[in-house]
Length: 419
Ligand SMILES: *Cc1c(COP(=O)(O)O)cnc(C)c1O
Image 1 (cartoon, protein in one colour):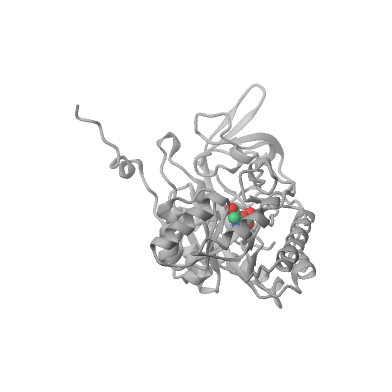
Image 2 (spheres, protein in one colour; image 1 turned 90 degrees about the vertical axis):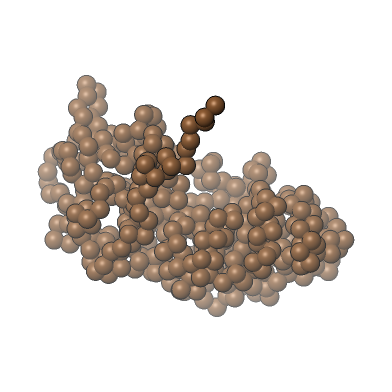
């Protein structure tokens, strides 16, 4: 998909703002997001779903910055949240509660209570024991909970094992063959209304066939259950459509929308999709500076000031992000293989192995591309590093949407016992 991080006059820009200009005001490393790119991705998906009664509930966990949520909420997005914290964020960003879905295998009593009190659209329940818990809490609150049952369709999403969620050995969802019984038993749960079914088979899917298989199964299942008297208001199709990280081929939103239309276009119920990465992934870069260029006997290393705590995806999922110079280099210049690493004391703190780059030195700026999803949201303070800033660019302006959180600040929460 297209983004708005391009070279102009030899300098990498986010929309109309030069990254070097931001670097004069903000110390690296930092995340930089493009409003136009987020908007574009949202609109492209919206257009791909045109004609369907579909709501886009953005998966907050991909990038939960409140400025990102506000932007998407203003465009009409709902939210898919997985914790009380995300629910607080989504509401604070102005996303209406009747467009919020709560997912996750382990919602606590506190979280279920929170969701019910806020009258959100639906809770996606992932087990029978959770369904009973929701019923009990709803009863105490004198409410009827709107619940979708998340089904585990036992489909292989063919993605990285750590982000595959739709096989029966994964912890997610209710097994296909026990839904019948659960729906029958729900008649006895007076504070539950089963409003729909939900699926989500994994993330970064680069092939449409697992979606196709899942949607077909879902449809057959709805027909089966409706023939026995069930009625559903909504089908939640989850998220998971992949994005190109390193020039790899991924299905377009149009192709994804076409699959949904082909299989589910004639269903009477409303649809929900929960994209995360697709909306924000390519809308962010991580801007970082070279600390040292280290020559070794067998390998040379570029040591950046960004590390695995800032962007975990490479060390967690073996993810490959394209890394480019902020100041454009001459295409004809000699290139050598280097490993690009961070300063954290772990060998896994590696962003790229043996990539060919022109010679570089201390102070050179790089951008790690496609870092808008599961980047800042997953960052930590490991090695007692700062939580890095997030910057948002809108045409010719930029704004800090999260300040750097320094060790001095979070150390205030630690205490030496006085015994
Ligand atoms: C993570 C998640 C999503 C979003 O996944 P993406 O791959 O970012 O689109 C959607 N729904 C559920 C239930 C999730 O857990």
